[in-house]
Length: 252
Image 1 (cartoon, one colour):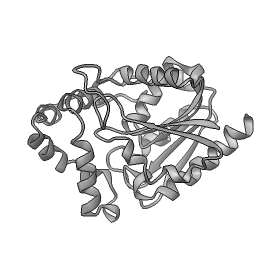
Image 2: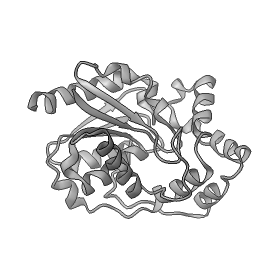
Image 3: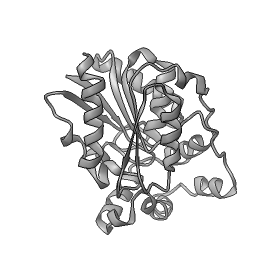
């Protein structure tokens, strides 16, 4: 089986892949989802909430599992982490699927007073809930945003430590860019997937990524916002499975 590692986004956990994983056939793929440090059920250390550190953590996970090379499917923050991983450990990748993630060669917006105030608002569970209740609805196309889903995603986010929520938010806006030449030198198959109505990470980011990586592909998921793997899981998984069958399994 081909190892496929699913890396969740900011404030989320491995639970956010639950609707999508059944669409990746078990006979072909060894499906591995995990919680990033500080999020979900993972440990909550006091430091290390950078995309660079998460990439190092991912290598340690692959080493512990005895996996030499894997496909990475990263959503949002997880997609950015995967790009750092590709530059640090290119020999460990079979393919990379970016899902609603910023292209890390584009300049990040940096921190301003509004973003800093949001980061500083994390603290007690009550404070965290207030921040998350104001943010989580943006993850979805309004047509897919029901009260039960919003409540679930807020509860998932509340499992994260306040330090992780604060420091990772700052890193997402201020991390150093990856030189674009490193993308142009990638030789692995790359697919950029994005929800058509994503207002968190604009569609242009997927276009930029696919424009720079030789031989890469792009897939637009209709009627989906920032979390298409949850909003329209079959429609999201279908082009990815097709891509992996054509570009990875057939080459094995």
